[in-house]
Image 1 (cartoon, helix red, strand yellow):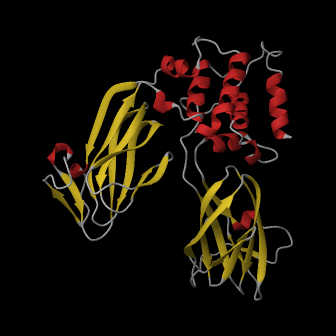
Image 2 (cartoon, one colour):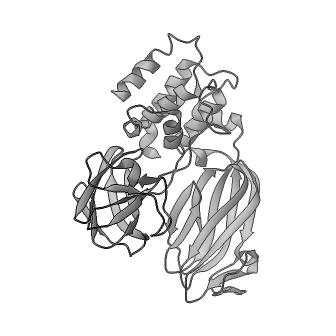
Image 3 (spheres, rainbow, N blue to C red):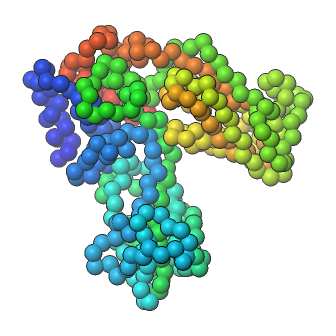
Length: 371
């Protein structure tokens, strides 16, 4: 029904050509063209639209907010068992009890489940997946496992042993690049050609097709604060190292953070140069979480091409024992309005017609499986 309403609205756009088409209208059509409308609640708000297009796929389900009337549990708010999230936490009875935790999931995917529980031998059930979950005497953060979920209404059945408690559980999947106009969504504003071009490029992950720019930032690993268990080497045993030096990890894993304050809101390729026999984990907040397998000698791996917000940038690299890290490189791509519009077939930077928006929607619908 939601998809039908969206389609009917945009079929009428040519008739309403004189009316203002807002960013809200365009956000709805983006969501529908990407096939994501099933992840919206029955009465979506602007916050729901922004959340769906933000790229974030970490969702915290507060137990005290999602249990159902008739569940034999009680909401507590004291901190005798440790701090809690949200407005409170759920406590079971002196007998086995259960709660039906209902919520809406914006995006389909394979999710890692984390929970904050107390006492052992509870069950958290998603369909036919039954996870046994145990906490300590006080609230304990627990890694539960992985589950495949489809977008839309969800119900998790929680079975608590006597006097057991839950604060929340989280569903965590890898983020994707946010889809939003420059400066974020302002839903009541009229959509511009720049807004439409930028968000279409983001929706289809076309930024890697933008022309190369001129700026290259090389962030050398040996210039970072060195954690215990690492050494700086100056040799060619792993192949040529940028600047002639690199960081060698010892017998235990370590975390390094690349930082720069020179990001200007441009599109960049993010490239990591490393070596090792075990996967390296990389996190760029709100954009990327990935594991990369490098070879025994230095290799450049393109982690992705991203629209970066102006200001500071921190990229976290988790290195396994024995790994070697040379540098992180940021290579700019041309991302002026003219570049974005040319990539999606728009020519007039001053106006965007309902026909143009319908054509972009059709393009997204046809090519969405490529993102």
